[in-house]
Picture 1 (spheres, helix red, strand yellow):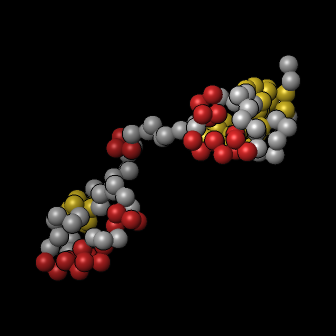
Picture 2 (cartoon, rainbow, N blue to C red; picture 1 turned 90 degrees about the vertical axis):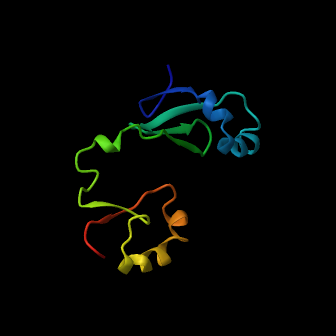
Length: 119
């Protein structure tokens, strides 16, 4: 049994080998190898880090976070209840003028909420 700094060597997962982000490295550096030896460097809840044996390359992969943030106490601030931009008051229209075009670029797929008080 071979190890690399106390981590067992293994073959790199086929899912990683076939991943589109790994294809350039596989084609150029690994000469289209079908199997690549690696050793795990770090494995956390959502992050995987392998070192390719005999190469000067590391591979990192992140898994989606499966926590349900709506169930985490304190994740939602109950002081912010008015949905932006549908619940704006007359004195707050300037906020929409500033943010509406930029918001999808800065925070895609995020819903903003405003405090109950006028801004």
